[in-house]
Length: 463
Ligand code: GDP
Image (cartoon, rainbow, N blue to C red; front, side, top):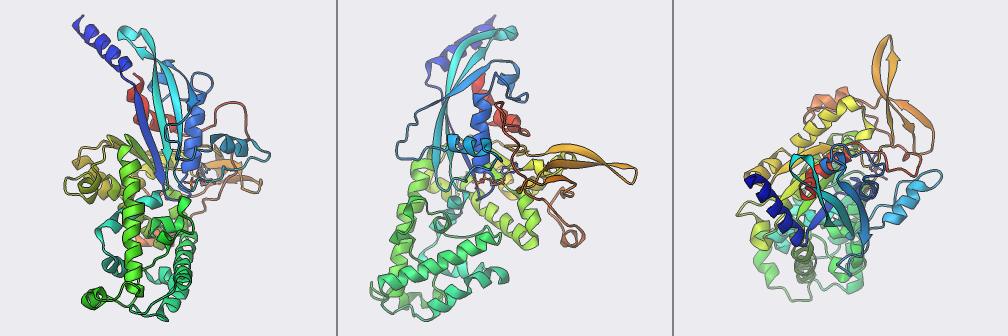
């Protein structure tokens, strides 16, 4: 009786409160953010009708009644292009949605029945769910706040491996024509900065992830602004500090330094202060399979990029983040996307591989008492699991259509259960080809374990 009463009181309190949750989705480019958010909205819109959400408890209990879009609170942020994404998926042939390139937002109102004791359904309640999508590249800029221009320059140049350096060659040759103390005009500076940005974009195209500054790759609304016109200065180091600091404001060194500071103060900090700090929950998406496909140097690079990115969730008391912004995310999910690229027997390995890729950040999060869980999922499942006969033995396979529409029946390869050894790369070939999205129907989008991720991220708010 007493327990029942407490339960009812809690229900009342919850309903009285304006129930709201801000859930942010991030990941590096092509990690699958746009597909994930599209599917998430689609599953919630189809909840209680035809969405398959058995792992989401409120849906399994038939308490989740549905979701409606309502106007978003932040009028300054672009709306997440859900309708456009659904139009792409619904076209003939179906196309993957255009990826989002900056921050965007969408507000849903979920209606559900509260749970009462002994399985009885309670009253109808609503949860306002704000979904925010932003580029993971922006999080790569957090460590930049620890540096001043000189130490940042040195760190950037030192971190380039031999292959990565190739992409920086043209830029580096052009900068070598100038010295730190000379006066450089605006247009030349813009040209050099553009060359640096091109080198970052080329490295990105070639599969590198650990690239800074993040806004150079995804400028959002800052495209072409002078705040994005700086670059690290080669050939100078700590021993030159005194001389450099005494240079006039018009010198190349001082100009770059001023712009770097402006970028720190007016681009990196405001993102953390105005947006990041207000997120309640977060899912970080990782294209582990894409990195496996791209080989050892890119895989290593992804690992470094993720370690940097995850520092934005390091809540340790002395962490840079805490000192500056005291954020309040109370739950985190990390997910290996595009699980439909491998056969279901490999999904468990995909999760353990993701966990070993993020082992240190996960340890830090657990230590800071932020609950974190790893998943493998497919936001929009483009393949069907099959079995084929291989010399009398049954082997799992995938059936789907390639990006040009050709029918495929493939076994894409084994996923290692932990970080691959050097010998692994020599031994094993990966062939995770791209698949066309599934043919569209009026029903909810097919997925793998979206419901498990949803249960972790919003399930407790739908009791
Ligand atoms: P974003 O840059 O993080 O927004 O990434 P997108 O959501 O645009 O995804 C990049 C690409 O990955 C898409 O164009 C698809 O080719 C592929 N992709 C994303 N999610 C899935 C998925 O669930 N299954 C499959 N097969 N491919 C996916």
